[in-house]
Image (spheres, rainbow, N blue to C red):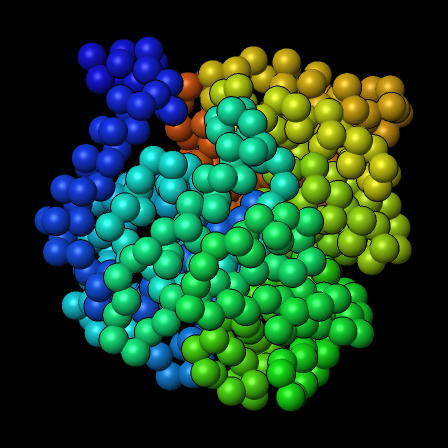
Length: 449
């Protein structure tokens, strides 16, 4: 009966939203509003939320604070961390309030929460008293769910609108941290707070200059009021400079000194499934990335096109279930523009026809199938094809799922991890090579090659 009602009542139906709010109120009451005893930092936006959340937690930890964190990819309470296998950015209110209560019980001082637009609209974060709200950027995503971009923008804005209205905690100001370079900065700038900080690559309270993109990461000069330092970030790409500068701004707002911020940023490794390299001794590069919008896919591919000596392969799909169909051909255009070889496959089709999703993507691709383009709605076979073709000096980018550990396929949730699949395929390839009698030592394993 419950599943029947869910199918009949849309996600944005007022009755359904009321139900979510009632559940959130009960959860907050049951766990006794734990956010009252934490300095709570909420990070929202279209892209970069997960990495910014992790970098922010790292800076606070480097400064000596005990930190709790929730993100799309992982959770953290102090020194303990574990993966998020739910496919949800912001968990249900009972899970979230329980996590916050656990943070309080384990003497955390700060909580860093990745906040999705779905969580805001569905009141999953009701009863969480935020002290700092961070806006990374905004572009067209989830517009089908929200009923248009303007609704999506307003939903994101609710986090900032509610910030100033929430009760103050002793010695903690209400702070907004905004991307000054984003075209929609002025919308978020309208909300009143005790203090506002901005960041960017061109301007802001905190900004980056002299950005140098490297295969090993990025170098840039980090400027704060009356001071600056050079930073060598292990994370590649200009977009990660924005994520790092956003996190640095949170550090500045919490009175953390510049040297501590620099140390934390330079120690930070890649977030699982975000520009993550998979290395099993192969002579080409394999990158797993969460990129699932046209903008993020274009940024990803343009970066590795410049860093790759040989050919660039991309394996990707698009989410099904009726989600953001308009972005599918745009993702195809991004791949067509930058990749030498394109393999379009499954992402999370849900119950939608896999071939239809593939064809929607290919509407944006000018080349014909077989001419640098393959349509393979089986993700493992698609990855296998790319690994079979790749040669020394090439790069294979597997995009769309990142560190997710499940795939939604034909209405079922199945175990899936791009990284594990890649390692398994490489392992089989290595065993086949051994059978041909050629030997090469790679990571303490004798294998053919």
